Length: 94
Image (cartoon, rainbow, N blue to C red):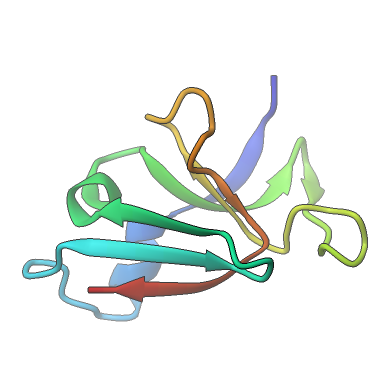
């Protein structure tokens, strides 16, 4: 079992004053090329999509340092972690 610390991705988006009302998709890209596509509905869902920066109280290390950060995408509704994305560098909203 893991304990992550982070913020809901929708809070990050809202803090940038991006209007999500007409958006359909959120694309999260990582430094290693891995890309995850989420529906805007998934991102808006309460307590579902997080951008995390700590695991078990420790800051995520970069890929170069042997970690999975500095940021990682965690989707609570994805119980097997198939769409979790480590090494997050970019979020595109369409």
